[in-house]
Image (cartoon, rainbow, N blue to C red; front, side):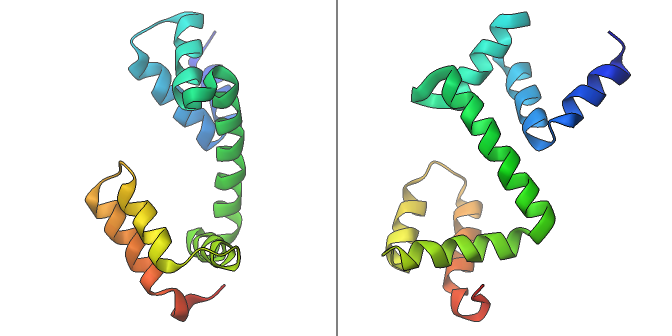
Length: 120
């Protein structure tokens, strides 16, 4: 298979295709085992089926961001969480509990603190 065809196929999946490509490359495996391990890694406790679900969700999210922009989606999700009973403080507490970089945590928290100015 020529590289142009491979690139065309992967790009057809959009951002989830890139994510799958990266997880396959870091798996250290080849062929079907690499795909299986990558989907299982993405799916966490739900395994391969969870990985397929995660890729599907990523596809929806990436399309929404490209259509409406990150800010609009982010603030809309924050507003929805608050409408469902979350508080800014509870959201910040959850963010602080995630295993993500400190700089990403600070960016997310800053956007939460600016929510009043950017109600979607």
